[in-house]
Image (cartoon, rainbow over all chains, first blue to last red; front, side):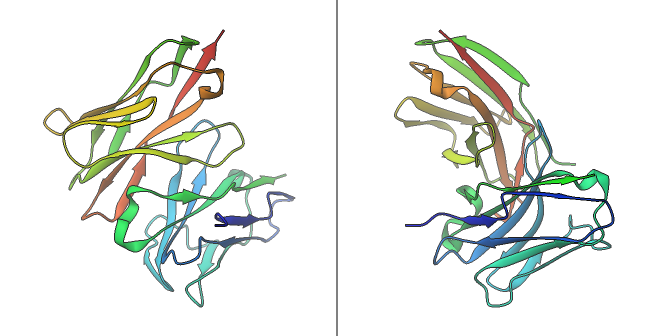
Length: 115
Length: 110
């Protein structure tokens, strides 16, 4: 069974440029999460989807961040415009809804460097 | 607010046993999970405690005490490949929120 797939693995951009990250969760997993992880820190939730509905986006900086999961499968996280402080690893995770968040399956992450 | 505290670093030798502690302050606490993350890799699930007591999975065990708002991860027969960061994560808010601690970096030496 394929795991959570993310792309790109690495992205280097200049500040004020836009960037997008893509995630394909494990087949059948209805819940999808986007996390941000700074160096030496734990993952911090940005947004959680149940199918195509964003059920928790309270930590998403909506002035520059947006996300979508149009068909309830894959998802895209966008930053526009990027700032220096956005340099981090963006992790996508999924879980089968009946199990709740007790076990999340993470992708390898997309490492963003903003210059 | 909601927070988890764990030591930033732990060092141990191969073959030894190490315990990584985690104390939490979360409202509507439901359970505690543990994840392992190697440098540059994805966090991977290790263990979950929904009830007080010990859960054993091979060389790894995890413990939870709700009355003390405390849990730990126990790693036995340490191997070099166990060198990684370990995160505790609390589930709360009606089984909907998963909040991670800052992580404990474990270094295993020969």
